[in-house]
Length: 629
Image (cartoon, rainbow, N blue to C red):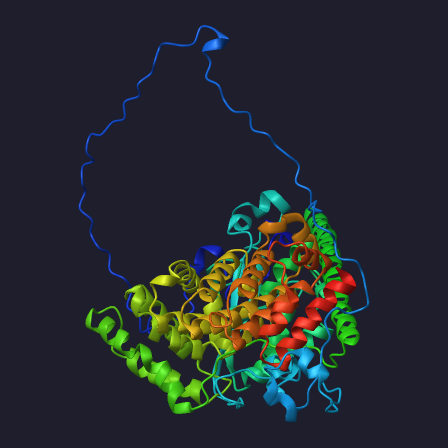
């Protein structure tokens, strides 16, 4: 064989045959014991057969044929005949009366009575963020943990690894000579792993749980060193790279790919002397030097540019749609005299007292003791739970990955091995833990946890009242990070969350109703902000089948037909804010509300408002309908 048909590699070549279906947590570090195989006795099936009775008699004439009632199909008119569309008018039918803090105690008075008062009232903002945490910029972007008021950066030794995936799945190793005329071991994708997370570049920087990428679970590990940088520092480095170096149009299959990003990330974490294995670059460089490899690389480049162009156009159209939504809100706010827009902030449920937060985190201890007695979990699980609870309550950003991974596995085992009626303490423990971003990302990519939550959402009435509140609070707390917010709009789960909101709003417990209304608000924020395709286009195509419009129907029904006792003022305010977010997102959602059978009666809504914030929201909704409906 000539020299040009060989690939010079350095280091340990990651052949596909040597790769393993690895688990993010080593067996020695895991506190969950592997399941034992249960022998199932063979049972001979009973001889049961189905006998079909066929009648040989058939009608001989057309008069003997059975008569069927013809199905009459009528076209559905989107304009809904018989209903008059509202005319565009800048004259408001509802007036918003801003009040000062001194007059806020008389919030139960009607707007007409307030307007007839001769007391001078200054025009102040009807809606103000209650504190600095209601401002979305400072809350979501800077904080790595919401367990306490402030997050502390803590440095510790964290191992840095490299995961290498063979994209050819071993075929290039077998048939490289016949295909490209060069003997090579494969074509690879790499991702840097630290803090229990995996970071990679493919037209944007992706962040997933360790070993949970879309490239499969079969990979080879390279241990590259130890870093003392905190996860907050590395996350800030990632954010800077995502803006200036690793955007969607910066990716190139040969000159600027995942290996270049992994090498730069490794040098930032460990030092400039560190480098990833050289064979990752050599295989690509050797393949593109062959005639067929160069043609494939050119085709991949053109395909990549085409995908980047399509995605960029989708992102641009989505940005334009969001800007139109903001313009709609500003116009309505100016027209009705509300000098501040409602805060774009999600609702999360925190525990202020550290000792109470730790008690909730340790709430799964009885479940672990039962699992230890059944020899399903190692006795060291209780100590690991104690260490994890201490780290979460201390509100540090960097937690050893083995603690987070073991904690999530203990949660999953506790849910799988206990009745659904006892899941309340488990949900309470998990709702505190997901306020830490690393734990939330680990939960978001777990192969079993979200399926269990969907099962609990389907059988929501079977949960006890404390379990229903705990589950709704857990889902609300997912909104503290982008990964959790994307779970709301994931096609596999979003219908379950909308159904859960409907079940929660109809519950007899006021706490369940309020938490369900908060979940509806978080869902509406995620739908408007994190949905990448055009929301207007999807709504116009799916109409009533769109999950966001189903959520609108639930909100309209509860606002119109639920009494003040069934839907108290706090829940009423959250439902109004969720409806405001959805109907102001685009023209299709607004038209859906205007022509809906449960269209709100604004005079009735104003009569039951007990706070200035609710009155302002009703005025904003009515003004948007008058201006753009």
